[in-house]
Length: 184
Picture 1: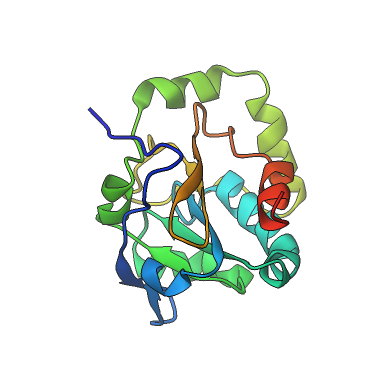
Picture 2 (picture 1 turned 30 degrees about the horizontal axis):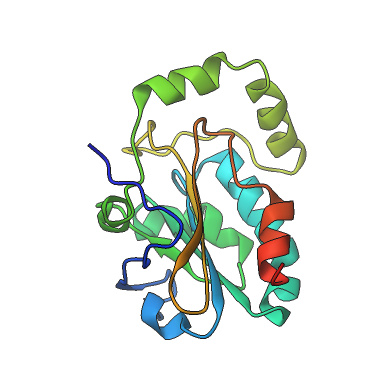
């Protein structure tokens, strides 16, 4: 049974490194809000589109006191080949052994992946990613059944929103993140 975090719980702390070798410790973000985003893998077109959207908002969010940490279940080499080419102004973390995924209860679900593939809206999401330059690409040895999640953590390290996706295409709405960043 996967343990899903709930609003009001303390976000589990961690120490890791981003793709540039910089330390990323959740504890060091105290005093700032954090969007902790768990993605599928570095080659996922939909994940890359989402990172692109975050990059477009990152300066505004940073000015409002919110930082982003993006985690991928991919090895460092794949991170650099795929999502790392976007040169995100926030940490991109490679977690190929799913340590952080397990810590935060991020699930793997064949059923939810099948539901995503069967959902008629999925083709539109894939087309949107392709139009933005992110083609469907197979990442060797990737966990195809990983389901994404977004957590909003306040300045005291308390989870305010824990959005565990039901489909691969199901993400926390940008408007919700905007409101959280703005302190609303």
